[in-house]
Length: 154
Image 1 (cartoon, rainbow, N blue to C red):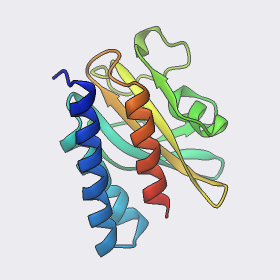
Image 2: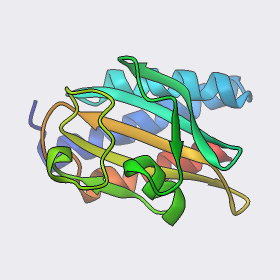
Image 3: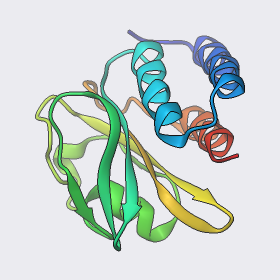
């Protein structure tokens, strides 16, 4: 599915409203991440993975997600998730097959965006989204997913 910029923004605005509603009725992080991954997978077309890796013992460990079986542990700096966590900044990869620091967990993934989860200046983990299409993610995704991550970390 190809969205116009206006359609994409509208979908993200609705996504943020839905997530705010879910957060009003639950304050457990694990429950909220589980519902969040389902909401992201339902909302964003072409998504093959929507989930979280949580920072524990100086590595990222697979958390709640929607998608196929995935990598369970990722070292800081390794892969797109480890890179985002180490740099504490969003990383967008238009074509994972051409990205040198990519860990292949699902052959259906063609592009990826990873957003760090930071609370009180502490790394909590990362939000990881993979698409079945190349170049799925842009500055609109980055803006709204960073806002989404901040919302989850409140």
